[in-house]
Length: 246
Image (tube, rainbow, N blue to C red; front, side, top):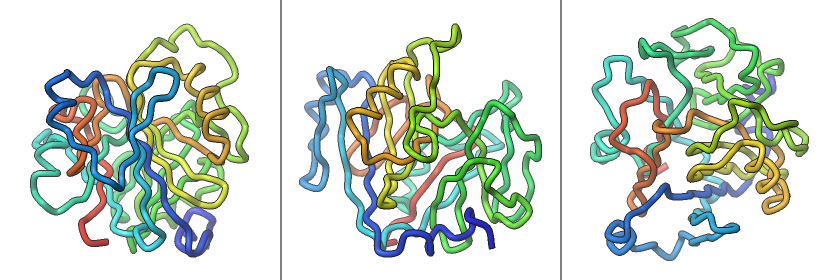
């Protein structure tokens, strides 16, 4: 059994932390959006956000939802009543095919591995979620895998963005990571450069041990009972969902 398949054994009895940062809310949207007691509203150097803490038993019920036929949006999926939250997933091409490695419930969707995408988001058959460097994953054994990247915080806690790339323009960002104690962390940011974001996260949240960049820009979306942020009406190739009552 590889590290990628031990997600529920690696950190037993671990709390999960989700951080949600809304994208360009209008004043009307902000007035309509009441933040429940289990959310913490944040402002990090002018970046408005939310923090949600989930307990250890809630690291189950995760799944990838494929959208190859472009039938769904984050809003339509969440409105089905089956999921506690919906998050946009990995990168995709203009023809809507997955850009990098993608395996869904044991079925190979895209076997191409993109060298610039350093991470793999893994969901075990029991719905337990983990995040690994692509070199540490047995792709034949893994049940559901979605390639993404780069790591904004490399495994081991160091900053993963080493310089300002010409292509690193301000954009909406969706990220998922793990803390040193095994907490799972999801972040959604308004327009920011990855270079700047990596340093902000490293100093503001030193508890984060690894943090993987997912698709962003117009794909960024997070929908739950408490928040609807980003572009939840935009159709993307796949979504990360968590079922209710898990």
